[in-house]
Picture 1: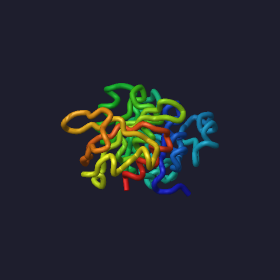
Picture 2: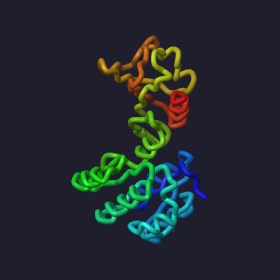
Picture 3: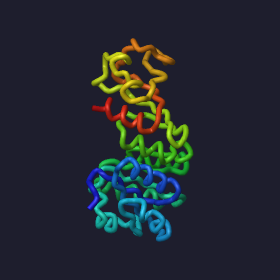
Length: 221
């Protein structure tokens, strides 16, 4: 049985597969659904569970328990009608958060009118970046520089308000570096140790994926 805080991805094409793989790497359980048996077969050993099903059928989705998931991602390819119908089904079934892939601005506007929580345009949002953004409330952006190094933008939580970089000391504690701070007054490049953070400031952090992940979880507490 999949955990309630898992993700259901409907459509296992290039985007859906990439997103599913990265969510699995991040330690989340993922149910993948696609009507293409070959696509499901390719992901069956990668995702927690992958099934062949008609995603526009409400009863099928209900039987798969999609309403128990915290987030449903509609990653259907070029079939706009199927995308829209599936999105409606997820909303009707009460999925807490619905994210949908759009293939055009018009498609995106329709999805927004249906009340989706986020519209994703694959040309602008690669699956890896979206995966990190979905599971990290303080993460605004995530860019892979290489297999090991990344740059991330993190919002400063209330718990760090009024603290200086010297107090947080991310370099010594986590190995990552804060290379810039975006404040309401402007961007500070290469901030000094005495720079004081305010809630909702945006930190630009560089380091290995593990270093950023540890820092992100530490500041979120």
